[in-house]
Length: 549
Image (tube, rainbow, N blue to C red; front, top):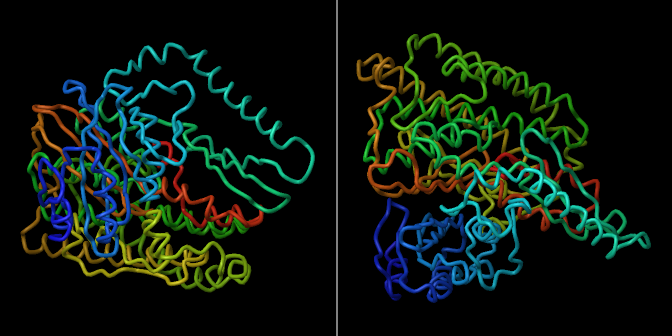
């Protein structure tokens, strides 16, 4: 970390300081230094942008832009800040996308929601939000949500008009002569988050893909500001219900850090069990969905059958199977009134998977059609992982040893034995295999955490009826924190800002990996056939709720 601090200290900064074991935090005085600093960091190995998070300090008439930059393979990270004027005409800063392509869509989101213009961005445009929000920058503190929502008819008409204009443009550019056209793949699943791929084709060959997201954009970051610190759980757990507990862990850690609180060992191991249960429930959908893209629907039925047992675990603890609200700042929400009863529920779920996994391997993972279709197709290299910030199982399928549970241990993971689970080829088949291997790893982690809890109860060191939750302050001090967890699909990062004696977040940035995994669909699909879209898209394990957060 000293080399990174040396680089930062060459420039005019307000401060350069250590922040956690793997992070350095710094604030530049001059926004004109940004590109030079980023280039120097790249030369040192910090090549990846996790996300960009503006904060609107309206009383100070400034926007503070936060960059979260990572050296993925050497575990060195930089939290870089710079202030820019809030006035729209002057609210601009150089784009780092030409240096770090992983920043691309994160800068577009910051532009669309806060009005930060990124000079030199290769394609600066409105993104994620619908046309009725264009030029209004809805995450600024002075945006009037109530007034905007009064204009329902005008808003709907603006959205509709945009699609007619797009249709006319395609008619003009391609017409009905020749073999080139634009096909709309999707929207899909209007309930959980649709996505449309604008697929530019010449016959059956894909020449380019432009993903269109935000159909049910929910402005979760704004909703978090309208709730108290406990109520915000309702917003963050809805990032994606496939893995419901881990976003709550991430958010709760940020609140606990600002409050200066540490949860009990019992709550830490409970977070491991609940987090891994959520990961397994999500991964089972990914496994079944992968085969569904090839028209093989039987496996999804198998996966849903197993998943029910793990949802039973969540229901037996929280009373809910999907929207569990089972984790909150201070620990986990509920005591274990009858620990053995819940332990038995966990055992049933684990046994169900272990009784089935040999058949899964023989019938599905060795399936000749799957191997023919998926082997050697849609390959990502380690360089791609670093360039575009492919995360979680997508990165590990390419051999990347990246896992927040190991790189920056949280909850009870630092006390458990685990290693990176990887594959080598980085193709669509490995992106299936890695999911199965990670389920096995999650089972092992649950068993380890369960043994820790049982031993603590037996030794009289843990009381499952009392140790689940510590008292948290009703009003928070002013501060900010960045926390990360290993979500089912990769790194989830949250940036929380609080005011003095606050009862709700001032700013909560939610970053999840499906944004980057969707951003690379053009690279993944270009040159392929139309028939490759479902398989390769399915291999990316994208959560559309994450995209439309």
